[in-house]
Image (tube, rainbow, N blue to C red; front, top):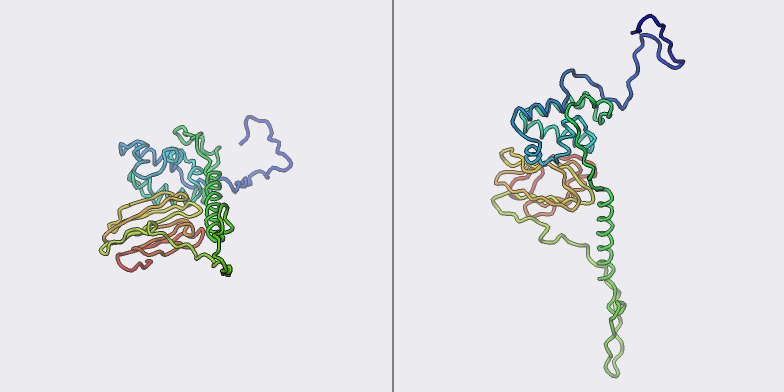
Length: 288
């Protein structure tokens, strides 16, 4: 549209008049008019009489993340997979259809986080957590310390006693020859300690999850469909769930979660990056 009567001069590389301007791949597709996803969640929360702190406590989603989602800032969710999980949990608490919000998120953003220029009309002021810890550095340091400790225990325990600092050879009786030292046996593979296996009552199902070298998104429900846990399982953390009927799990990074079910070590829940859906009942553990 021209302003006044001045002719519009196009740049040499601009599109021809009447042609559609190509959309940047990074820009989300705004296919739905009306309030944004974050606006809908914020409005429903207020109508339900809930504060951000109350919603955060019930969903176990941190307060800065709740603020960010209500401002349509999905970058703070950590990726499209986690953004969908947050949307389902928040929608359930404020009485909205979570699957409809997820479908709209996929249609508008295509799994990509929105650009800052498109969030100017998001409504509430964003709350930035400038004191957010650097989890990547902490994770690298923790893994390095664990590897060093394991190496020390393995090689220190397998070394002959005579080679250890401060170890002195006992004097031999007169006329006795020195015994031939057999080669040191290779230490057996470390076994899971009894403390790592959850107690398993015969009439209940007991599931214990232990995070490995990377975090994983985990949701757990009991036999009545009630949510027991829905959050990140950080490195080194564990969660134990017990129910008389069954435990249903969704694990976002299955290769990084170790499973102990009804007293049995089932190993990793799957492969790295794999999303698995599992169901366990009392007795011999069988994945559903």
